[in-house]
Amino acid sequence: MIGEGKFPRKNTSDAQHWEEVYTRNAPEALPWNAGGPDSDLVRLVKEGVISAGGSGLPAGRQALDIGTGPGHDAVFLIQQGFNVIGIDISSTAIKLARENASQAGLFGFFQEGDIRHIPVEDQFIDFANDRGCFHVLELQDRPKAINEVHRVLKKGGLYFLRVFSDKEPAGEGPHRFARKELEDLFESKFKIRQFWESALEGSRKPKSYCLLMEKK
Image 1: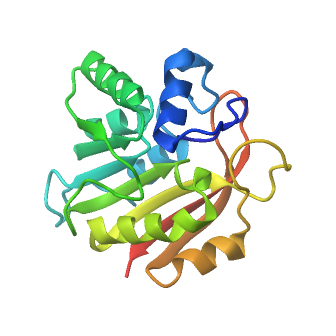
Image 2: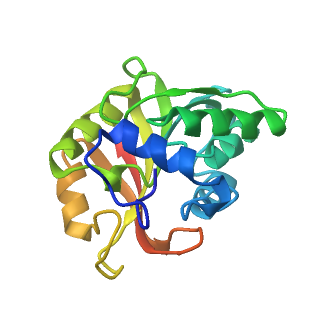
């Protein structure tokens, strides 16, 4: 789930809204579908900042892909040796992610799930990836999501977050976060290891902030 854009929210539940988005639009028409993994995620893995194992770390570490959508990030993480759990609030998105993993000859555990109530046990995850789920949450739901990601991560676990930034002009779609706003939200539970400006790949390329955080 990256953002609504041309898919304005109706008076429906979150699950129903995103299910309608995925059932009424071809995957390639979704503006957040870049057709491959997030380039910043790829860079962090290739540089060894995020690792599935080796160099003193246990092999086959656990990754959680939040709002997995078509599953491109999840597939990439599986290819890098992670055991991946991909969750999305849309059952159709989950089906699409499973199909993309299967076509690549890979297996990941994909299931319906909500960042506000992550269906994973406490301290099970080494690395959590969120490419555009957090920024579509309502104000009151953000603390719930932060608490849930913190709960499922192991101590010292890493969390890569990408959100729309306040450098993106106002308009439809996700909330535009200011840097201080993000720091204030996360600083009590996470150490921000890296913070940088980027753009979200896809058809629209909106300006975004990326954060690599470590669970305190």
